[in-house]
Image (tube, rainbow, N blue to C red; front, side, top):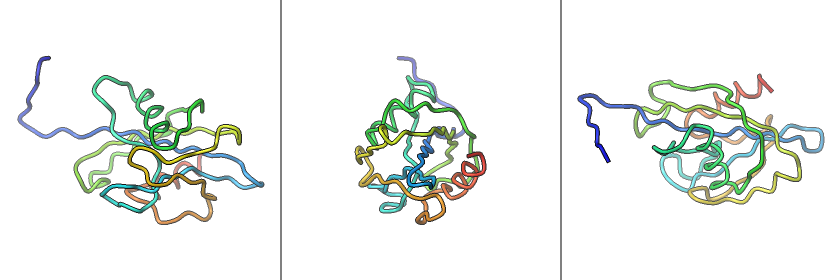
Length: 143
């Protein structure tokens, strides 16, 4: 495998999934509780880093399944967030995908680096990790 080196740093690329469902007349969103730093114990959208051999679309499907067990939900690109300091570890650019789950497809179980996975009413969210409060605000406006 050919290895490339650069004279200047490169940003990391991540994906996140904003999955909504209707429950008892209210909109809910699926969040994971982070099992690792940064923001260990805080709630966030399921997601993670894009691997070298996958597309953004493949990465978000993989991350959603790894962290929540959910699959089979139609996902579309919502927006890319690129604020310089959105991740305390390094420069990170994240593309957010969104979808609407049915009740039949919404039985989430925490996995991988998530310590919990739970549905939250969109008007009663916990404090969110990273810039996910801004992401949620954007997604709810589009919803």
